Amino acid sequence: MNILVTGGAGFIGSHTLIELYKAGHTAVVVDNLSNSNPESLRRVAEIIGVPEIPFYQVDIRDCEGLEKVFSAHRMDACIHFAGLKAVGESVEKPWEYYENNIGGTLVLVDVMRRHDCKNIIFSSSATVYGDPVEIPITENCPKGQCTNPYGWTKSMLEQVLMDIQKADPEWNVVLLRYFNPVGAHPSGRIGENPNGIPNNLMPYITQVAVGKRKELGVFGNDYPTPDGTGVRDYIHVCDLAAAHVAALQCFSQSPSHSVTQTHIYNVGTGNGYSVLDMVKAFVRVNGVDVPYSIKPRRAGDIATCYCNPAKAKAELGWQAKYGIDEMVRDSWNWQRQNPEGY
Ligand code: NAD
Ligand code: UD1
Image (cartoon, rainbow, N blue to C red; front, side, top):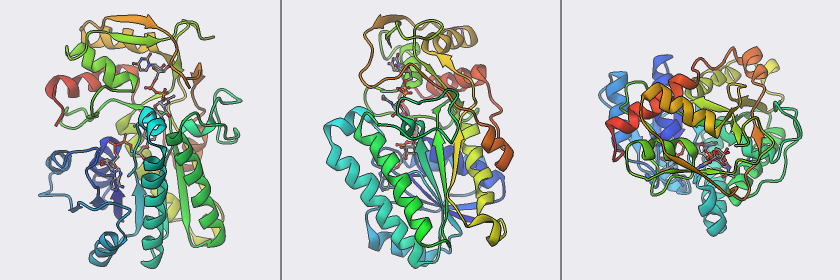
């Protein structure tokens, strides 16, 4: 298939491009580069062994710009990564988050349907479960209250896409609810490149390890978890990328079978690791020191969040291959080789 990859220059998008080409697909990337560097696409092309990945520096809110892309390329499906994702910033700038993430997706979907491309995979998040009522979380777990506008954009966009699919069953909608993506391509050529002070655990750990930050603050050690620190379902970004390729099969089933509903999948490993588990694994595998100290809890954090990934295995034949050792190894390999990012 030829796939439109919005946000393809970003962390998860760039890794997904590699998996798409490996599986014999081709891609066209649309990205406004608001949180990425085109160098990522150059390196992706190098890894895949193609001269270049077709790329348009276009904002998904720009209807005319998207029209041009769709006029130049026949698209079979879209994997929609483009969006703003900094939780704290979304609290400061809710309008900007709703306008970019929701406004942008509405424009994208409108242009897609005009070009008769009605297959979309959307990057959702475990954050839509709020404080989950069951652990491990299955897809049947009810959605919950998000603690920030970023999370609400994911929850609301799930609803928007489900409603569009219900009204026009020609649409095929796949919602992938990512747990905590970490790691990097094993080559160390592409990886996560956060602007400023990282919000997320793994890039913070790698920046401490490389000497850019003094120590990791561990946000709370009094949670009801085995060691008191927060437990999450970390997933290697290459596994997450492969889940998108597996999800494309939702678009090629016979119409009678595939088009009746929105497909929702948890994308995690099913294993919960604490903050200190991650730090210890990082130190053990990489032989580097990661000084840390215990800090107060971070507002909005929950104690435990990991999934039951059985549905994705049963229906898509997908399951995570990489474990915690590969996650911490590849995160460090990327950071060590690229201390300043791209
Ligand atoms: P990222 O910031 O690295 O990638 C997102 C890309 O979208 C960036 O390249 C950015 O420049 C682009 N973009 C943003 N707004 C745009 C717009 N209006 N028009 C065109 N391009 C635009 O983030 P990521 O970690 O690769 O995340 C990809 C998607 O997955 C996002 O939707 C994110 O919310 C979602 N997600 C990420 C995580 C995570 O922990 N990384 C977890 C759950 C869900
Ligand atoms: C966070 C967001 C979530 C978003 C996800 C991916 C919040 C409340 N949730 O999830 O909406 O989808 O990122 O972008 O922000 N930790 C530390 N020290 C740090 C950083 C993190 O101890 O410097 C701890 C956290 O308390 C948590 C764990 O590490 O227990 C993972 O944190 P993080 O990587 O930010 O992910 P989430 O909070 O799960």
